[in-house]
Amino acid sequence: MSEMLLEVKGIKKYFPIKSGFLRRTTGHVKAVDGVSFQLKKGETLGIVGESGCGKSTTGRMIMRVLEPTEGSILFEGQDIAKMSPGSLRKLRKDFQMVFQDPYSSLNQKMTVRDLIAEPFRIHNQPLSHSEIDGAVCRLLETVGLRTGDRFRHPHEFSGGQRQRIVIARALALNPKLIVADEAVSALDVSIQSQILNLMVDLKREYNLSYIFISHNLAVVKHISDRVGVMYLGNMVELAPKQGLFAQPLHPYTEALLSAAPEPKRIERRERIILQGDVPSPANPPHGCPFHTRCPKAFDRCAMERPALKEVVPDHQVACFLY
Image (cartoon, rainbow, N blue to C red; front, side, top):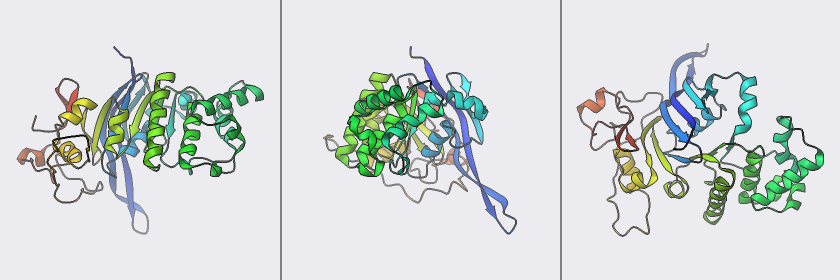
């Protein structure tokens, strides 16, 4: 049985709404409202959902880029949500992040060598100049770039090459977990496949675990072992990818998959058109967050919020239909 790497328990992120001359807090945007899941060592968990559903905020809280309002994030049994900055700094090398835009996540004034070597300096690695140079060269070769590229600057590279540099930097300290937030969405389709295949190869070589955040179902299906579906700050379904794509249980997941093009599928799913707009996270509906748009909603859905529970082996869903 695989060892548990990460346990996220009931994390929330509320952003205050300020108004008036005195900028008093008059409400909150509930970007993430009680999300829980687990990640085993060597596993890839894909998180999907519409824009604004809270998936990127969830990833940033796991990295402690954002402070959780509530909840716990256990990394190998240690609650990093409550760690002091000093304690977190010592653990930081074990989890890294790959952001959506490689151009803005790289300092354009630094050479590639300095960018990839920076983690060694920040974490006080006892390496000589030549040892760091050798490590940078190995990392560049690992991600499919030339060693001579280390003397160039980020603006001299294409988008796909820049994302490879970001991945090389993330791998510098041999992390156990990488959170990839829309890591290929800004790239051309042909480059997307190259980066995805690179990440799959690196997962095997470095025994990595991934949290892969994306709105692209095809990408998530390609790279993930399990998939979590988020809606309005809530995790509504969590299952192995084969089970989720073959037999989605939550009405929102069904609608999401019916909208995705599947050229290889002979019998196409019937298109489910959801009525209305996504409610505001500043004023979410009472009860099930999806009930205002759900074609299968009944009275109880407007009264109570369903808990995420296992309804078939390894398949969890937050819905009163089960």
